[in-house]
Structure formats: structure tokens, C-alpha cells
Amino acid sequence: MEICLEKRRLSRSLWHCGALESPICARKGKDRSACGKPWKHASVQKESSFGIHIEDASGSVTCQSDERLGELVLGFLERDLQPSCQLACLETIRILSRDKGSLSPFSSRRALQLLGRSAGIAQEEEGGPSPEIPDVDVIVEALKCLCNMVFNSATAQELGAELGLIVGLAERMKQCREPQWSHEVRFFDLRLTFLLTALRVDVRTQLAQELRGVSLLADALEATLGLVWPDTHEVMRPGVAEGEELQPLGRQETERAMEILKILFNVTFDTNHRKVDEEEAAIYRHLGAILRHCLMSTADGEDRTEEFHSHTCNLLGNLPLPCLDVLILPKVQQGSIEYMGVNVDAVNMLLKLMEKRLDRGNKLKETLLPSLNLLTESARIHRETRKFLRMKVLPPLRDVKNRPEVGHSLRNKLVRLMTHIDTDVKNCAAEFLFVLCKESVSRFIKYTGYGNAAGLLAARGLMRGGRDPGHYSEDEDSETEEYREAKPHINPVTGRVEEEQPNPMEGMTEEQKEHEAMKLVNMFDKLSRVQVIQPMKIGPDGKMTQMESSEMACLSQQGPFTQNSSSEDEED
Image (cartoon, rainbow, N blue to C red):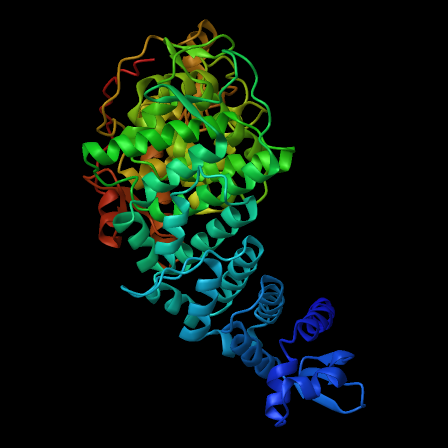
């Protein structure tokens, strides 16, 4: 219904500026002056998905299909028109291009070139005349048309890449500090860039490498937010005193900043685990400092602020891991959170964002994992970050009467996630806590319980205990008096103090105990033969492996089990 109403309005606009009048008259063998008067009072009688019916003053009806209308409008757009007529043609194309069934006339090289020229981003042939800068309203409308076509048509995506639209967009992006371009032009430039980089790998690579997209977009983000650099890795807004609360960003600035963040995410998605040289590291640290400011800023409204922080967090997760030190490099200011002599405001903000999404509980894989992964990797590589997060998430253990997953603390909430139905969610939560425990099995079990920890330990081959190789600093003793007193009575499986249960083998002779053990082995063997259960054992690599029937039979011939336990320094 909305598209039909738009068609009616735009058809009237086209008749007033002559965009449909001349081609139709020419088709009927009439000149413009002869048919101008009858068609001047034309009106749209009916619109449907099959076409547009136009009735003239004499009562005759002409039916124009969307495809035919598109061809006529494109033909007229090739002429030297006044901006108002160009605008009417482009508005028509924008409405028609919303419908995938009407894209045929616009998914051609000719159409893309026309729209690129109207948008001011077309790449002209060498030696050709320099194109005039179109009217700003025409540019905006042409960009909207291109966005619709690139989003809806794979052919338009391919042609957009071949015609080098991204080059024209990048050239205009370099003018991010020039006042001649309105918010709408800048915004739809960014929206089209996002669509091209999201849908075309070759365009994404071209922007990232050939056009130096990271530096270009970081500069655009800096200009959008109006930042200045008091130090190498520290940014601020001009006129904001030290310790003063930042004012919320304006709606237009927030919209453009989020588009830039999304484009940067597209072009950096594969950089976080690859090695970068010094020049690239400097660029990413420069970008990281701007992202830190985004994290500490707010937008107009809570929902918009959360969306802004979400895009920021997603992009921070793409930065090379060593470059995340920019989160704690700014000097400590009045009102900042200081820990071990560094400014941990940004880390604390990420932690708050993560807990907020955890409490919400909706779509945890999409909303929680980016911030949780970012905190995990940052804690793994930066000592101050890890120690601050451990203080917040795993403070010295005092509650030993409840299971680790019971309660309202952040530790309790994360331990509950370790048995989540989604494998990615539970693995990510376990990995985060494991890193905060410096990948020490004994400490991990202390805070989570063996039952909750078993999944990660089995996957890592650490069922026998020990520690994953890693570079972690020594920590001070964190055992509380309550924990020391209760430690001998804590059940390591559940992670809490439990009442002592009577020993079921009390009073049995060694022969009776061996008889009961053999009954248990035979029961396991019988269940495994009918494939009800699959007995497992811990292999030499510490991982769980399948136990064969012959091995089950051998258990009956073994003597009493002996366990050599070695004390492990928990460094708690």
C-alpha cells in the first residue's frame, strides 16, 4: 500500500516536470507541444503490482508496467535536467527499487553508471571531462537508489564492484572535515560503503588494502566525534575539562559513527589473530584509542547508547590482541577507576556491558559473546586487566556453603553459563573463568566445582590436573580464613561444604569390597555391550578416550587401586 501511494505521488511529480510526457508522446508520434496540454492534467487512476494506469484529460488510459516506467525514467535521467526533475526521476527509481520484481531496468551497467554519476561517485574515463558536482538533494536520492539496488540485487553488487564505486566513496570520505557535505550525504555514503563491504569480499579487500581503509575510516570517525589528541594514545573532546562528564553525542553524529564502526568491522574481521607490523600496529592503536572514547561516550537514549557500545565492542574484538593495551594506557584522571596504577575505566565499562547482557538473558550468543571474548583475550595478554577482572569476578572465596552456580554474584552467573545448552556460550564462559584462574586446574575447580569444570578440562586434556602453558605473573595468597577452615570438608565435585555421609563399605572385609567392585565392573560391562553407556578413561594426553570391552574385563584381574597425588601449588 505504501509503495502504491509513493507511486501515485511520484507519477504526478514526473508529469509536472515532463519526465513521462515526452517519451510517451514520442512513442505516439507526437511532438511535445502538441501533447503537452492534454497530458498536463494527467492523474494516476490506479496502481497495482502489475503496473501504473494513467488517464489523460481526454479519457484515454495508458498502462505502464514498473519495468517500462523504469526504462522511461532512466532514459530521461540521461538528459540535461533541472535538479527538481532529476530528483523526481530518482525518487521514482528509489521506490521501484524496493521491489525485487522491478529491478530489471536498474541492474545494468548503464543504470549503475547513471546513478553513480548522479551521486557524484562515478569513475570517469581518463581524459574525459570532469563531471559537475550534482545538487546535494540529487546526490542523496541517488545514493538511496544505489543502496536499494546493492541490497536487493546480486548483479548490482557485481557491477558496483566493477565500476569502482568504492573508490568514489573513499575519495569523498577523505573530505570528512569539509563543511560542504550535509549529514545525509555523509550518512548514505557510509551506508552504501557498508553494504558493498558486507556483500562483496573483493570490495572489502580493496578498501582495506588499496585504499587504506582503516586509516581513512579512523580519520572519518575522529572527525565525526570532533576529537583532539592531548597525548599519543589518548583522545578527548575539545572544551571538556578533566574529570568532567561527557555530554551525549547528537543523533546525527551517532548515526554516522555507527555506520563507520560497522564498515571497520567488515574490513578488520580477520586481523585479531594475525601478526601485524609496526606501522599496522600504530594504526590499530590509533583506532583503539578512538574506540575507547566511544566506549566511554553515551548517545541520545539508553537503547541508542547500547547499540553504539555494541558496535564498538564488536570492533574492539577485531583489533590485534597486543593493541588492546590502549584500553588502559590513558593517564588516571579525577573520577577514574585506578588499579595497579593504570586507568581501568574502559575495562570496567566492558564488564558492566557484559553483565547487563548476561542479566537480560536474550540471544546470549549474539549479544554476550563479543564482550566476553574481548575480556577473555584482553585478560590473557594484559596482566593489569586480568588482575582487575579477577578482583571483580573471582574475589577471595568466602561462601563455601552454596554451590558455585547458586547466587547472584557475577561468578555465580558465569558458572551457570558453563552448563548452558549452547556450546559456544558455555565454552566462552568457561574459558573466561579459566583465564582469570591463570589456567590453573586446581584454582579453576576451586571457584567452579569439578562438575562444572569437567567439560573444559576434558577438551583441554587436563583431566589429570596441571596447568595449560601460558605466561602469567605470580599472584599473592588469596585464601580467606573461611576458606582455609572449610577446605578439608569441601566436595571438589560440587564445590561446596557438604555433610559427611556414612561410608557404605564400613564394616566390610577386603573380600566383600572386592566382590562389590567386581559386581560394579560387570554391570558396566553389560551396559556397554548393549550400548546403553560407553565407559571412558583418561588417556596419556589427559583427554577422555573410549574404553574397550577387553579393558573392562582386565579390571577384574587388577589389584587395589592406588592413587599418587602430588600437591599442586595453587598460587592462591
